[in-house]
Image (tube, rainbow, N blue to C red):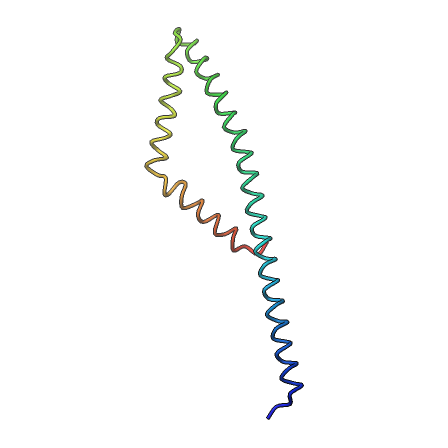
Length: 114
């Protein structure tokens, strides 16, 4: 049969290989999680600033349209109607416009090598 020293060396090499593979897996998972986490935080920050912009531009548009129409409410009703229309479009096409592209982007990020 085989020499005892060679079998011990082989098992030691296999243990070392398994340990190295596990460490590599942990490092790759940590890298992917950090990339996804940092992109998520930056997305939330940018979205918050964009939301504030939309709120203030909507208020400004409401006042402007109201002033042009000569009353205090019609501009805000027009802006609200625009947002209602936008909401309906997003509700009708949410799978195609939001869910599928977002899911695909998350999957690409999780399995990307960069």
